Length: 501
Image (tube, rainbow, N blue to C red; front, side, top):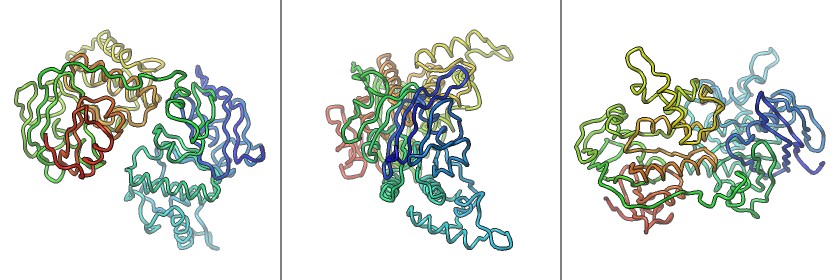
């Protein structure tokens, strides 16, 4: 036990009606990046909250460098050298970087006042360690998400933390920012810091981690050396079965053109974009961050302005649309950010599922509760939403189930054209498989599905065609027989020629 930096043994934790953790074991070595993997709801967050002093375990023990410790609150966790960087960053935006790093423990001078010079000087040292090159007196609200994460890491180092927990740290980062983050993690590993890394992105785990521990349904499944395992084995450990048909796709004959877009532009954002999608077709949109993919569809639906071009739905030219008029014509967009744009988190599954189709069960002041419940039941069963009751607040659901509720909300309007922006971002493999299955079923029913995605495997395995964008223009269009990551990246980086559809 003395060889481990940290060890959690036989940890149990229950909540009313839920066994969140059942005998979980986890070990972390000095200078190790150890990934914690599991489906949403598997118990990862609960385990980390026990380590961070947010929850008290019902049973189990925690050892730091071979010594048993009692972690009963956040302060005692920090005193034991543990720092947790949550997915939702908790910095104070209108305070400076230095003030955030030393919040609640500001250095004082002999008179008892805050020693700002010393605070700025010390903050600069910690910022230097993580490669954050900017003034310590910069206000946090002016920083990018990646820069804010670096402030969190600098803050953790200032506590002399030996154990750093990072929960989905790359979910909002660009590829370049991910590279910077990983370089910082490797630097900390070299200094002997142990890092617990939580992510649903398998490719990241194989890039950055040394070991991977899998938990399922609150129980410990096993630990693997990253170099000695593969995605298939990890997926099987996570879900308790082999997902041989992870990407569900049935190819069939396509129907008539459902949506046609001709030479649409938005000044400074995208220009002369033209494409069409047929009934029953799954059309993918790929490209690097900032290529203009999401912006094209936001403008088509009237969320953002459109400066020129024409749109045809079912062969009929339509004028400038709004989200409601687009929905009336059978076209809906499931947004990229489910928490900000797709859900009302403080409200229930029932409320959110029916929010886009109130006209179906409300006439004046009369609410048809039976019809409302019927809509919720149909969508929840179709999408396999796991929720205790339909009255459960959406905020308490896992990311995968939140995403299913968002999709169900828009499917309730019976669309003929469904646009999905990053449909599986930040959700586990089981929920992904469920969503791929429903996408395939919708296409088989003749619905046109457009998928905007940064995951190349998702695009390649699910789509009939792929359109690639680069700097606001379509740089390439690939039929299925020509799909490859290399070709997509050539077009995405502007090195694959210029091929407008």
